[in-house]
Image 1 (cartoon, rainbow, N blue to C red):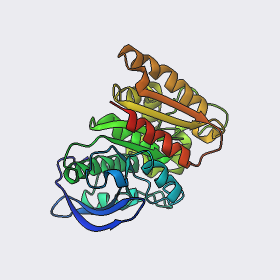
Image 2 (image 1 turned 90 degrees about the vertical axis):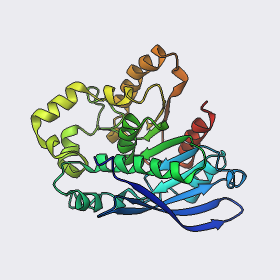
Image 3 (image 1 turned 180 degrees about the vertical axis):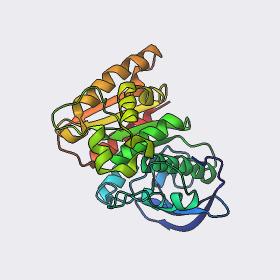
Image 4 (image 1 turned 120 degrees about the horizontal axis):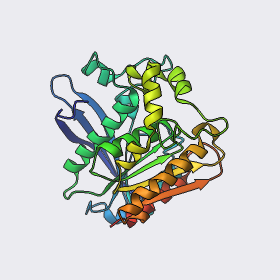
Length: 291
């Protein structure tokens, strides 16, 4: 991915209310053929002028049912700022299941999947937040479902993320490939339905076998010793709750060996696939409590 591309930010709008200070920032990556998107940044009133509170970053601004008003307030009331962007401004999630969007137009001929592109966008937003804030902020990322997969990849590759959180991320996310519960999505099913999410090489059966043999343990372990929060609905069978529980069980040994068991949180609940304001609140509270 083009990590060396320059990142520029410009404030385009500011709105102060009793509940928050909302800022719209234009993020521009690259110079000759730049990619641009909006980063929405909401500060709790008590921190709106100091900019010294933790920031929870979300790539799910394209989903109003995820980033609803109650969800945003659930974050702000913990004293954590909320930053969000529309990941589709970087790579499309097209119904045609073809790789498309600005990142493919800017850097053509690449094999990156959309999950990698969205993870790249998360890291570029971290670049932007570092410029916006006067001091180095404590930043966490929370992704739901397919964005949860991207959040985990960003957390594994970007050491500036103090907390990585994934909600019902399933296959190619927090769920182990080696423990498949009833009704769980397989890697083959994901590749057949959403081939644009993964790299072009993932269509090869030999590559799929190698991925499943390695499993997702190296991905999750790469986040340690930084904080990790896995949220999973036990009745969201497609997201493989059994595989997620197994992966977390193995990961606990990694955090315990480093003397930091409290930096790994596993939250299991009922209620299906959708993310709720309580899920947002739990992650924000975890981020706020980090040393």
